[in-house]
Image (cartoon, rainbow, N blue to C red; front, side, top):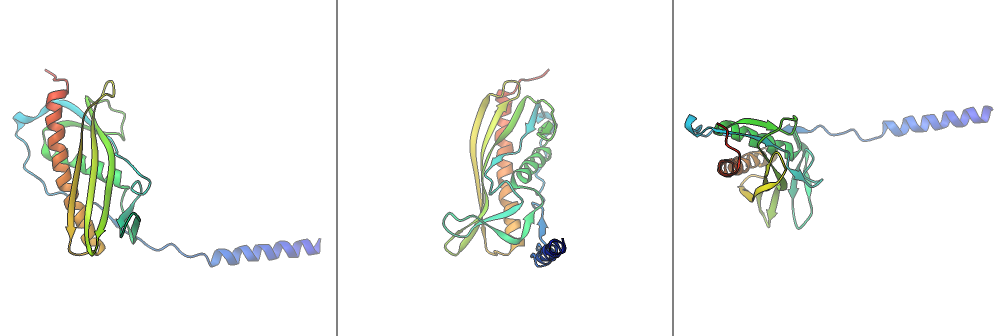
Length: 208
């Protein structure tokens, strides 16, 4: 019995010692996607009567996380140490698109997949790239989306298009990289909004 107690005590001390030498997690700088510059709102006459639901884009495991992704060379996907996004990339981009539609003003009946609201059309698809890429010594942000417009009542795909924006970087420090993501996302958002509104005018059911 005495030997058993000594053995258990030794095991406990070993566990305590092991816990004390585990590396502490490094603090992270948390970044939002920089705020968009507000474009001129559409005239009231251009307001659409159909509703739109924005869904989070499908993404690979490497992009579906808060890490700020970077491809330093070849096909190796890494991330910036000690820095991360406030949300996974698909959420960041969905929210940026929602903000883009709100700023545009033509589609006012908006919702997201965080709610169960039904809509005439749904905007989704897949996020193919949301990262910094190096070509030799030159770095740039790449944002690539395969967008799908889906009819709400039967989930039929009615339109699709690929969007891609690249933003060259003169500074590869994280704050400058984050600013580059904001610029690329702004341009991509403007193009997606214009395309979705154009398609919606042709495809969505018109209400009296």
